[in-house]
Image 1 (cartoon, rainbow, N blue to C red):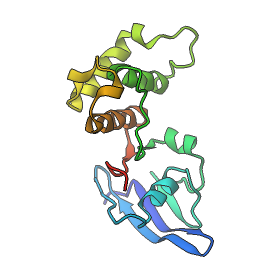
Image 2 (image 1 turned 90 degrees about the horizontal axis):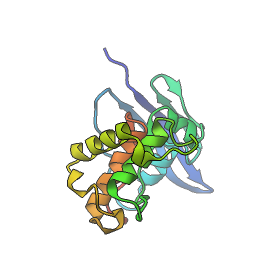
Image 3 (image 1 turned 60 degrees about the horizontal axis):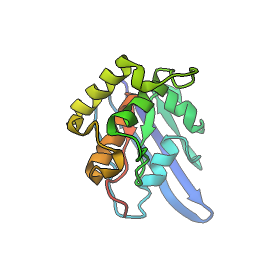
Image 4 (image 1 turned 180 degrees about the horizontal axis):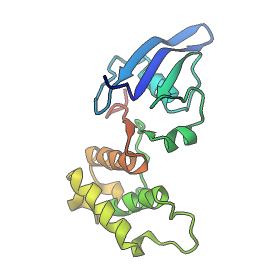
Amino acid sequence: MTNPVLTIANLTKRFGGVTAVSDINLDVMPKETIAIIGPNGAGKTTFYNMVSGRMQPTEGTITLDGKDITGLPPHKISRLGVSRSFQINNIFPEMTVQENVEVVLSAYHGHSRKLFNIASRNTAIQHEAVGFLKRLGIDSLKAQRAEVISYGDKRLLEIAWCWQRNRSWCFWTSQLPG
């Protein structure tokens, strides 16, 4: 039998006397896709914030690939392969769609801190970026400035960011706020 890759056990978050998330238990198996759905205020974003390290749970544990990640800071959880999107787009509007992808790929591959690194001169990064855009069906937009593409395409661009950064887990919050 295969072990779960993500285990949530008794996860709870309280804000003073208000319980936002109560006693969540969840096992996610390899290659399984799940959806957390519910009305506004149900605790979905709080749940994502706890799993991604942006918020500490009041109780419970989060185990990823057998390692307890409960309470780790977001940057350490991200390095383990967990990423998330937000309800508000976090793209670089003044850059092209392809440049947005190249920036994240450069950071993922450790090129972002090299002196005089220019992603536009790195053909391997360029080809990888176009590959991600093709997989998402938005490669025809690669030369467009990100600020002018549709909201749905901006969300796809953020999915590309998630895949590039970690390639393991992407928690994607609702397409539209509210």
